[in-house]
Amino acid sequence: MAISLQKGQKIDLTKGRSGLSTIMVGLGWDPVKKGRGFFGFGGGPDIDCDASVLMLNEQGKIVDQKDVIYFGNLVSLCGSVRHSGDNLTGDGDGDDEQIYVELKKVPAHIHKLVFVVNIYQCMQRKQDFGMIKNAFIRVADASNQVELIHYNITDNFSGLTSLFAGEIYRHGGEWKFSAVGQGSRDTSLGDIANRYA
Image (cartoon, helix red, strand yellow):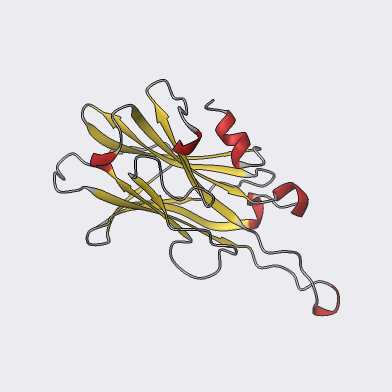
């Protein structure tokens, strides 16, 4: 049975789960239904949300640009983090993008994994997270797909173009998960990464 979290809650991920070695972090969202436009045509381009993970050291910094895992860099340099690839529309049920983390392979100098979602070409397309609904982040045991944690992100993010969904971080020799659910006006993954430069 998955534990449902609220914004700001933290929970032990590996404590009491010694067999947990690889997790799947699923991120999902649905576009708000568009109007059909004039005479039923148009309605604007699809909203292309991109999930990414930033691997941070103990000082909260990105050490190498290869520590940013996204649709253009699907596997971390160490091989511990793998991205499933880009979903261009957000249509359909379940996870829109998935990121796999082999916890025991994460290098010792990496202390936090930050999971973010941004809207591709948000400025050109005039799109923001007010046009997205049913956003969530969940964590499952990759070996059996049993969901461990689920966090529905329910805030109103109108006018915001990036979403910090959740974090996994080291604490006392274990891994913990934090439900972040914060929006920002960062317009690209590069902007987000610069926060941790």
